[in-house]
Image (cartoon, rainbow, N blue to C red; front, side, top):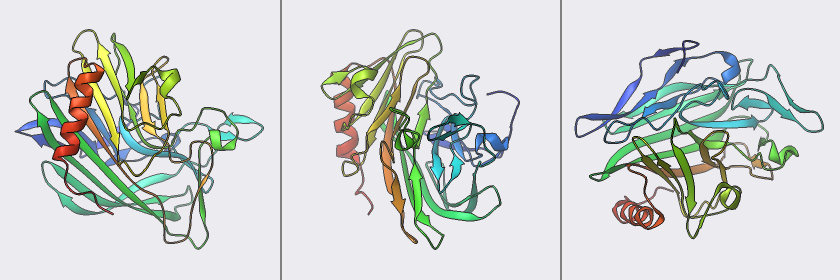
Length: 293
């Protein structure tokens, strides 16, 4: 985190008296970063930070957040905008996600309503967001992130990624986690396979990052089983993961409707192998509450 932003009133998620994450719900950020609430730092139970915000290579990466590169022409991801046939160019089209009202606010649960607005201030999306923390076992806890978007306009809103506009493989957009690698080596793992090249764009029941080195950690991303979104994953030039809303085709949200998603991220100490990760996935699924519609 650098000094280009003043962070206003972060809230803490706590488990057993320990702060495991900070939620920056009213950020004061440059418009080019597409200001939005985000989680940073997120920590393991041992206190190791596993998110990164505003890194030099991608200043618009904000820890764990909900970010979409194109919603009806507005950029809610930050940075440049991909234009078909031209490439990535700077445009004055950055949207803002603003807190509207709280629905719940406790040590382990944050739920609120937001408005997504274009650069002229017009609100085009209503969002209901629920973020909860719960213990898994002595080495891990789970972050449950749910959101529901509703089109506030009178016409269909097209949600798109650069890949949906012709940039192959750049299908990012949706819940996105920028991880802190530091001096560690990070492995990308999935059910029965491993490696960025085998999991980028794949549909898999879970995806994990296992960081080896000093203060090792593992992140396991488990989407709602009914969603089936392809994974966007980077593990070489930087480390980031997110299920894609519009991997290769745009997603249209009719008036009054929009996508709903849920993803649970298990935050664990230690560099876990595939077998240990599978055990965590099973523990989270067994211990989870009934899923909302």
